[in-house]
Image 1 (cartoon, one colour):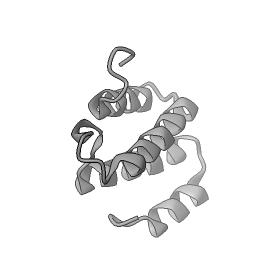
Image 2 (cartoon, one colour; image 1 turned 90 degrees about the vertical axis):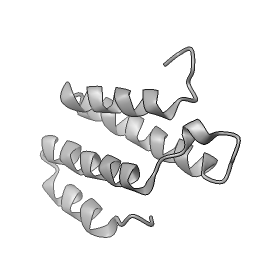
Image 3 (cartoon, one colour; image 1 turned 180 degrees about the vertical axis):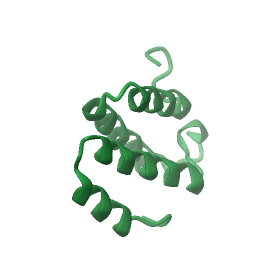
Length: 88
């Protein structure tokens, strides 16, 4: 990941690893970075490796909700899930 920081697959794999290790706070930081990188590069045709498909974004949102659940932040998880759609 350090050699190719622009590879989205590396970031998503790191996010999943943190999720599986129950490192909730670091996983949330990585989630925010992934969403930010995706937004910054969504119209940039030269950075195809930084794009995510809509279903991949949905999966990231679901994992964020599960992380909030793991942190016992149930109300925040429910609020997050109810406001998120594939388009935002």
